[in-house]
Amino acid sequence: MIARQRYLDKLIRKKENGLVKVITGIRRCGKSYLLFEIFHKYLNSVGVDDAHIIELALDDDQNIRYRHPLELSQHLRELIADKDKMYYVFLDEIQKVAEIKNPYLPDSEETVGFVDVVLGLMRLKNVDIYVTGSNSKMLSADILSEFRGRGDEIRVSPLSFSEFYAAYDGDKKKAWSEYLTYGGMPLVLRQRTHEDKSLYLSRLFEKIYLDDIMARHKIAKDKSVLEDLLNIISSSVGSLTSPSKLAKTFNSLKKASVSDDTIARYLDYFVDAFMVYRAQRYDVKGKKYIGSPLKYYFSDVGLRNARLNFRKLEENHVMENIIFNELLYRDYNVDVGIVEYNHKDASGKKMRTQLEIDFVANRGSARYYIQSALSVADEDKRLQESHSLRRVGDSFKKIIVVKDNIVPRYDSDGIFYIGIESFLLGDGMNW
View (cartoon, rainbow, N blue to C red):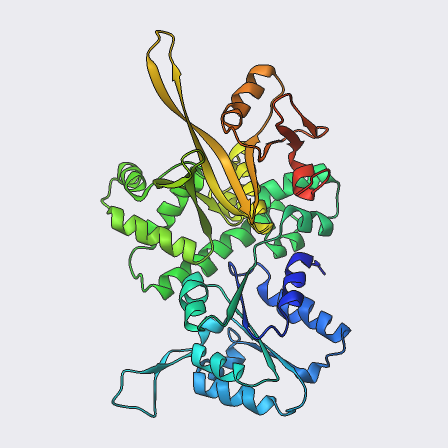
């Protein structure tokens, strides 16, 4: 069993807090396992018997009838028979529940769906509800607001490197190489050969994610456009881009016309399905967000690599993507930093230059400026990688993460250097 302790701790803290726990994340990242196995065993360990843990997987064909909201409500209420003890209700893939017209108001436009079912159950004092879903639009902003402030989201990601390494049979160096290539989808650990891992990840993309997006958004003819767009952003992961720039690239490569609006809409679909994340640019000195262009990172680098048939494993870009995901895993809000400064060129002409910091990570009052670099082995490279950090001018911690397994250290400017494995495993870090 992969412990997934960080998520378990969140569930324990939120247990019986009067809110519905909404567990979101990309499909097959382990949401169901977290609830049905890890949290279930925890509840057993603190004295909750199985009769008071109600589990329903709504993507199971045996439970199709419960995708009707009224059938679901009746079924759950029948199972909640003991009025004096707490019941823990786990509803997996809740978005499968249909939205229907209210059968008791045939002349009305009013609908009934899973939100009504959950809100109804929340009125019962002896029910603690947990739902999972793979669609951020349904289960993040819109639905949490429909729960009228009574929803509490827990975002689950594929395995972090520390989780992967804890379950991996091999040394740290080999684990990093595997993780860099195949990512952290939990079932990848069961595959033994490159062919098996490659096939598993490719099928996830084709049969789960793309087909799900097409069905959800009723895209009948544009699968090739979706696939080509994924290929383009896979090839340029971590690069600044925009719908207009991607449309130009797409039209140039494919010799076909696709509008900016279509590209923007499809990017929203990828974000909605947790396949990719957006990172905004933040002006560190101006203390403001800058609009387009943005950066896109994959929620799992193995999926990104599989999309490109493992042809373009640029370690610098993949490592940057992994650091971004790690910061999200540690509950930081992550932006791309911009630092502007005035200087004179060789001829004495005044210039204004904009430098980029890979990540500005914020959590509460804590802030970190983080740069990803394959190496800072020579002085010129070190100065190049630290240039933007030295221009920030505030007292928050500045970090350069390198590929090499180095002894963590500070330089004369107060910048902290650490190897990627130590950074991901938390060795020597004071977060």
